[in-house]
Image (cartoon, rainbow, N blue to C red):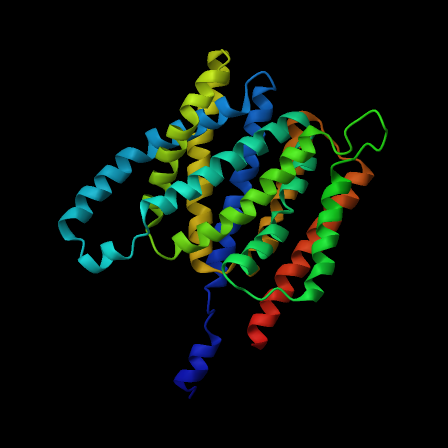
Length: 311
């Protein structure tokens, strides 16, 4: 008969299967989320799109949050309430999220969807950097090689123009790299809140704060569009809620080192959406850059996971 210790060893410590499943769902719907602004066209400002997305998310999640809050107010224990993170932490996450999303929307409006998504996926490098700086996770020197490979892949996927008359990378790729950097920082906050608060409460506050922060900026840049375009943009709300909930649950079940390789499926999803929806077929150069990103980023994650087990 197996000993209790042996039974414990055979259990998935981080419940990897659930984390991977939630991660794949989040990747699929995140790819759809970034495709919607591209369908809307470049005539609608990124800030306006981001505001509509967060406003729609708030309108959808508010009734669920109110009902859950009513039930919890009756039976919640002081210990359960004390586990919640402070509101300022949700504000920090919202500032990072709305800025990152606005940059990403601008990027996908200016360049092919798969190329933009490939650059956005260099966020895995920034995730490890910020995890090392903020969470004090070890970042060994040998990890610099796959990190550099991943970043080079992002630059190649950006299709840089080296002519003297043009910007080296262009506005679209620069926006994508900025979004990737902010997502790396945001991931640290996601990991912290996912372990300390309920998913519905996290999602509610992110959407409320995001809509409030974006409202004045969206009003300043506002451009009228057709009812069909507004309906399409409003659909970003429910899609984003699925992404947020999936990511929160994924990070609650598994470490970032496990989920980073799963998230690279977004490049595949975006490639298929770009090909089917926009007739975008990436060049050989773009495919090479994507391969470097996936290879470098996955090596980072798998090496970090192996090191944790060995420790």
